[in-house]
Length: 155
Image 1 (cartoon, rainbow, N blue to C red):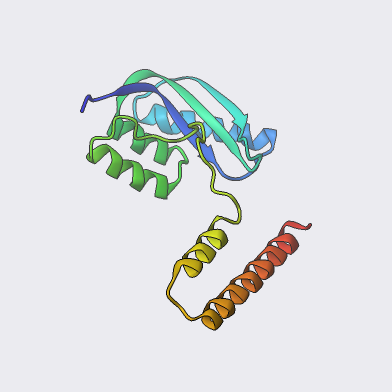
Image 2 (cartoon, rainbow, N blue to C red):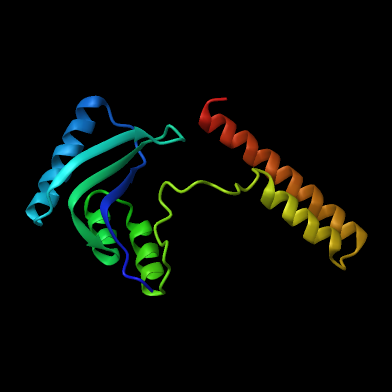
């Protein structure tokens, strides 16, 4: 695998910040990276497509290796789970290990799990009354789940 290097760090913040907080966030990222000998040239911020947070692109003066970039993104406010997943991808030789801000090619339909479960039940060798019971149970559970999520989201 090629040791890809980049001058750009990508950070995804999954919470909304006001303008003053965004400014403080940027200043603290600059301070963190400067303390490591990395000069920040500019930071670009956009609301995330989900509108639930922010995406930041931190442009630096230095080419950064994959492992360094993954670590610097983490200490700059990136997600700990994403850090560990990317660490494994890099170790396994994935050329494009960072999926952050990538275009979504396929999105699971909201009722995917329900449809999948019903498909499995219909193909099973269960007795007719067992299938009927399970299908009824799954329909009730998903209706309840939908109702609860509606209440949580205020619909």
